[in-house]
Length: 465
Length: 144
Image 1 (tube, rainbow over the protein chains, first blue to last red):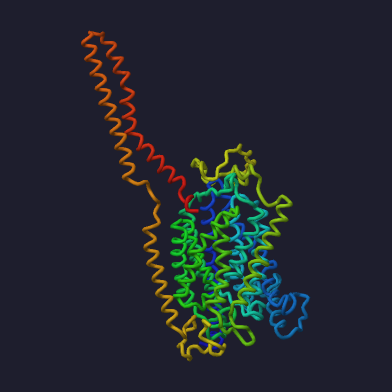
Image 2 (cartoon, rainbow over the protein chains, first blue to last red):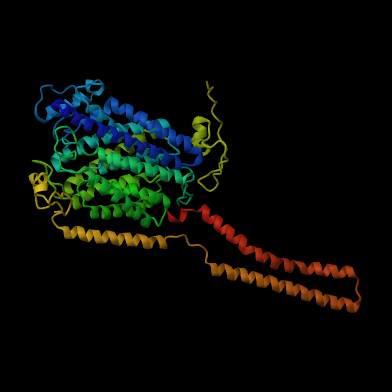
């Protein structure tokens, strides 16, 4: 084999690895579609699933328009430099020069984004990151089902999926990010960078959105609104698990010229450890939430995800027994957080805050205790509690809760956040599409958050070709 | 410190170091990982025990049987009482040579008592099915 062929083979291995990992990541979205569709009531199943489908479009397009540039342009801002863009001196040297090279390849008009035989990797990295972004926005979509306007959800999904989480990734999941370079922050599986941001963003939105009609009794005690199809919800989560293996595999960095697999922080790791630790976290998480929730099926299946997220930040560093303990603790305590949120009068339809927000925070902070003292590079602080605390606080509060609350507050004041009471009672399938998800079966909503009210008039059917 | 390495050079050259390539937490102090493993096994045993302890509490069988029995006894007593009343009435009527129509009317008067007893036999079954229905309706509610 000629040296050129060997060099191309290395490129092709890398290109193929990220390509197929990203393809498998789409299973996360298949899973979210089934999970949220099953978790909704029968009168909202189509609207819930269509909203989920739209996440791919709105985030995919906006991530191409500006999200990929944000990831590459923001790592130095504000502590180590400015935002890098077309205004940056093309002759810049040092770190700014290195970042500028990546930024120039990330513009939507960049030649690196199209078919280009001189660059096989920029596009495939964009593909992987776009899937990360869609996943982040999908976490919000489950929390707000059955009462949010589609337009409001689309705006919030763009803010979360193509901006705030991307800024968090630029700062905390990049070799140039100031969380890492200045504080030694380590978050291999994006516990706080992705899950913490989205979980807390969802919490901020839920405060303004309010609960579903019928969720709380007049005295404030919660009613349980049951999933219309719990088996579909469970299958959905199983698909999310499959996608998560791909997601975590895509967090491994392997590009031509490397002699070892590394994390985004440049530290050595193995893909095999991702397989072992993810599996153990999944198993221990299910066990933890089964015990913690006293065998509640909804919490039990979510426990697998809670376990993985609780160990995600240190998945590359923890020993397997530590993985079991940490995942168990995270998933065991998750149902208590979910119930506390409900007692506070917040209607989180799928427990997104408990699973992603709480476990994301826990996962990132645990690295500061259970994986402290790891060296990550010359001049980079060791992993530790303070570095994790700063990064986690910025992710969850500054980039998660505040933007979620702020944007949803503005939408609420403009009357653009929530559907009308009549539409909500009639069901979003009927209100938005004039259709029912199960037209051949009677829907019996009695005792499941049903409020007897006169139905609204059906929208005029669009003539079909 | 949980890290087995103090410098990046040691970390990158772990394969030649004392851990033989292991880069995970506490690789330099295996006893801690052994303790964590024992704790993990303990959690697993706890889980197995919990699977037996986390079932829904169904109504106690002996209670429903005693309730059912008391209804049956009350029902039988009602029947006996009705029969006794009827016999007493018959004896009195035969002694007084009363018309047949009055006998039939007195028999109807005793029937509600017997019916109460018969209804009592059915009551526990109905109440049990309602309880079960309620259980299905509240599936998961009492857990949250």
